[in-house]
Image (cartoon, rainbow over the protein chains, first blue to last red):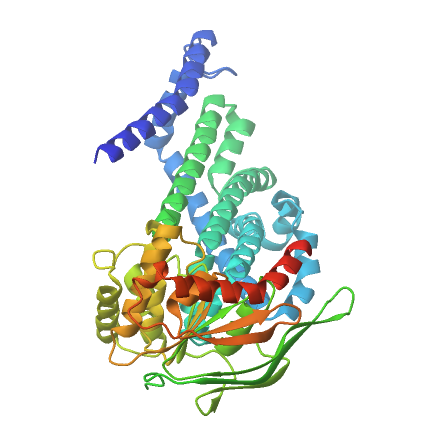
Length: 266
Length: 269
């Protein structure tokens, strides 16, 4: 009991420490920014940004754009992650598949997701499908690489032990390979969705520039519209902060999932 | 369903193992030829210097490694692969890290298709036998070395194997724990209605003399059987460590191994 109290106290202290620098920066920022009552200039104050949060939430613009982006990342992630796990399992089961897939994967892996934006727009238009393609592309590689590494990292001795206890192929896959590879698979998903989220914002910004704003939405495009049409810098900052908070939340969620799925690793 | 059950003997005829060095293409004779009869219900220890192939011999009997030549039989059945009738205790226990003590021990029966109720009942029976009551829901990393050892033993015994193959199972334990675990092992081995056949690989001569009915002494390069010694001390053996004939037996075996061990030492392995 005492031990866990000490531990949670340490966690609280760490959180406090993590927040101290941002808070100081915010105070300095508020103090240095020119007093501009209209809050439309190029140097908005933290309080102005806070107000912007309220305004954009009130108008429904922020929740709508955010929901749009979240739906895109969820779809892109689901499709790409399933493909990545399937591909990794195939490579793991049949080594020849690796010889076929490896050159392809290693060629495309270093190509940044945003490099695909021109082609994605040509192929899928400027809407949701282009964004899903970009996200999916970003998610695929970390998921594939980590899943394969996880499958291969399962200790041969444990497999030997299971065989001497009478386990067949499927029993070994279900009770050894899957739980053994799970931490790496979740890690791959976490890294993938992080890259995917960063890519979707970039994608929506450029997609926005092409379509000149309009129906395709998303938080990246919301930011771009404020840049090109009204120069509402504090709204853009609201967008940036939202993007950061969402990334942090997704990451925390996956870390939680990781701990829940691997209770033995604590 | 039950392939397992009463003790059975193991017969090795001309078993040998040749490795080919992938880089030089040279063939290295690692083991054999070995001719050995392991009798049903006997506690057989295999000792020898490092590199004599004693662990390889055990893996071959376990069916995890196929010998280059020779025949192996369990009773009258040829050994063609691993199976639950030959349970293996690994040196570092090889417990499944993501399973609790209970699930680790229930794994063998589960793999052989037992229902949840049956296999858990079986696991609890073994948990009681090896003294792990109260630790059912712990994960292996939460256990001490001695408790992991017990868990590994219980996991193998849950399958009620005909032969128990143990590969330096106490090597990772400290000296005091090891002595306690040796007594535990003998207790578990002899408390059933019938004694299992045990093949116990160790580098500790003392341990072999304390535990075994018979001791096979191996020499290195190639790993062949140098001597078979009838280790006929009466059981229980709790008191024999202080006896002069016990010390003499150890000395006798050490003399058989010494030159090999020295050679292994100067060869750097």
